[in-house]
Image (tube, rainbow, N blue to C red; front, side, top):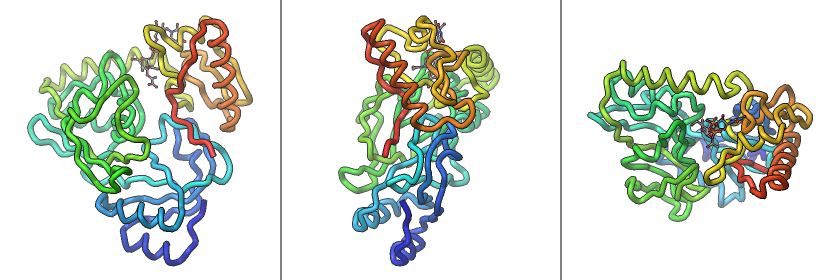
Amino acid sequence: MRISDPDIVATLAEIHVELRQGTTLAGLTSLGIGGTTDMLRIKKHENLPDLLNLLDANHVPHKFLGGGSNLLVCDGELPWVVLQLVRPEPDVVLDGNLAHVDAAADLGRMITFCAKNDLGGMEGLIGVPGTVGGALRMNAGAYGMQIGSYVREVKLYRAASRQIEILRGEQISFEYRHTSFAPDDMMLSVILELPSKPFKEILQGIRICNEKRRSSQPLGQKSAGCIFKNPPGASAGRMIDELGLKGLSVGDARVSDRHANFFVNAGHASANDMLNLIADVRERVQKTYGVSLENEVVVWNA
Ligand code: EPU
């Protein structure tokens, strides 16, 4: 979707929104898949309500992009514009055990920065790619921990009220890869309350998690992490592996040889290749195990 109306373009400049015309999302997603659209980069949180009013008034559909690391976007000309926060500098400010973090901050860099200041707790998330906002929205977790456990307060744009609001941690429900945020809420910043821990100790935890991840996940390849959520009490990866589906391909979309719940783009996979592979694997798991696997990856279909 392209924004060409000069009045809209002028208003965007007034509200400090940068228009990047014809952005290809394949370059902004870890899967390396996705079509083209105009991108709106937001420099000031407080201008979001004005921006969304402008888009609505002009019937311009939109979607929010975080780090693009858990996302499968369809190909071709996309029927919505994409909104993304510009990362401010600094993006993490510490105050005792509290970390004030912008949603656009890189998750891994934030964890490392906190660790260097003797704040721990999130060692398990160190290898998870993406932004803090994305991790928050879906309550990213690994190795027995989840980001939601550390949330003191979240600042977000609420689609329902069309305003920026602040929610306390207790007002948000954080479940396994799921939160009570609405799909069209946009994370802006978060205050995390982290336990004090000596850097050396945190580093040891980080090394152990990194080692586990390196030995079990295809880190060098284009993927969106796990494709399916684990069903209660079971492992999607193990089920897919037991069915002998590692290496199964549709075009260049391929079930990883290393971890069967990671589907990789081994070359120039199209979104349809990936979607067809997902559908095929889901059907086979359903047939054998009677379990309907739910997507963990977020799909943006036209
Ligand atoms: N397994 C296999 N074959 C495989 C993959 C796994 O037999 O191809 C077995 C493993 O040997 C293990 C069990 O399945 O006994 C579980 O595997 P793993 O420890 O890799 O954990 P997982 O349940 O597959 C979850 C998260 C990961 C997270 C790891 C580590 C989900 C869907 N996945 O994977 O998160 O990194 O635990 O905590 O919850 C993600 O969210 O994208 C993601 C990758």
